[in-house]
Length: 192
Image 1 (tube, rainbow, N blue to C red):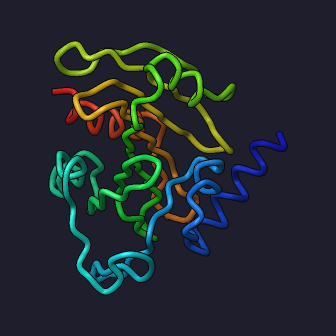
Image 2 (image 1 turned 90 degrees about the vertical axis):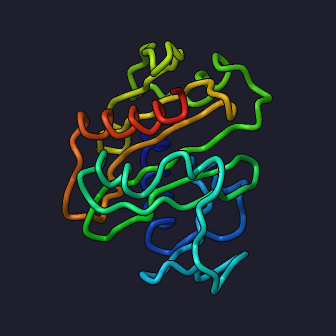
């Protein structure tokens, strides 16, 4: 319970206050460090402040139009942001509860080791197949009182971890089925 409360507190603090450049603390909280972006698309802190957000490899495998179609709402793909891992994400919209991130691990772990590291007692685990028969593990359930889907797969770019959940601030809450569908489509884009 303490761990869940700490996770919820970290989520709220990061969502409302933005992130610092302290990536190890962000990783411990299970959250990528993300520069906040304005409506015009320019970064407001960190590297690249004042420049337009550019999406490049491997994040550009998923484009804004695809992601918007999958999510059923307007989405903007941001990334890559590099650090301990390469992070991609959809810009958080205050009217939409979707929080979608995907990252590529450095490859020091095997798929089984990463699944063990990313597992949580509150998330049920099952093996699934993505496009082309790519083996993946899907973790689903309620995390900090909200539906959460995590997909872990070994793709050409490396070990991929996709997280889809409600961010707690949007008016339109996503169901567990919607989160599973969106996460699966993002993972499938890299598997095919």
